[in-house]
Length: 270
Image 1 (cartoon, rainbow, N blue to C red):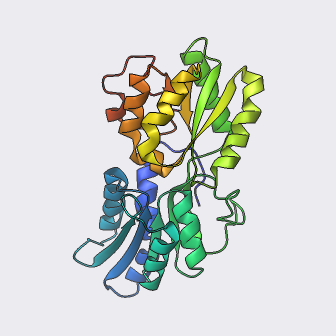
Image 2 (cartoon, one colour):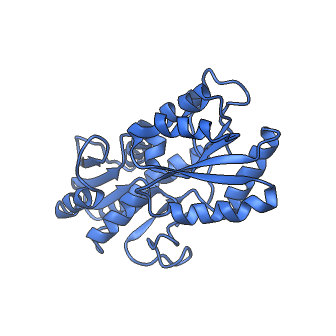
């Protein structure tokens, strides 16, 4: 089980490999068609192509000897629990989940189908695993978060944007892990001379209004708590930060997110 801050290439390799392990074990016994469940907040072509590439390396090709049942939250009224229940009823060989809320929903629906986090934030504090060294149960995968990383990220942010003091922190109202991540940030603030103000996002459609509120509150900069739904809206978020002239620190990103931004608006990554 991998619980490290990973480079992009290592992360992509792990997604493909971890998601395929239940299928690979069966493939050694007898070749047969396999079925995989996929539960995520929204479509993410990079992660999905990495998954398909890893499975292809093991001899599984979608549409040939592999069927993937996709369930995406964005754009529909069903809850994660309802989507996870649909997948569990199909009895796939494994369920790949992107983000903490989908992982928790999948775990509530099955204790026997392997669940692969690709990734989730803090599987220990969210109750997904019993421990990092001996997770137990049916959940494994990748985590990209650690409290020491959060502190280092804020140290770099303060050095990169001289003079910042008040930082807006965007959290997702539907992510149960964000209370823990917010507690981590609050403990970091006094030592670094930073003040954090929490802004709760209940709906991605309200992001423009949230950014307007941030600007009106004399905020110097902005950061986001790790969240798969925020990642799905990354281009909108980075554009709003640039439009409001807010230096921003993100926990993940792509090269396309930095296009057209000045050095002080550019995304800083650890």
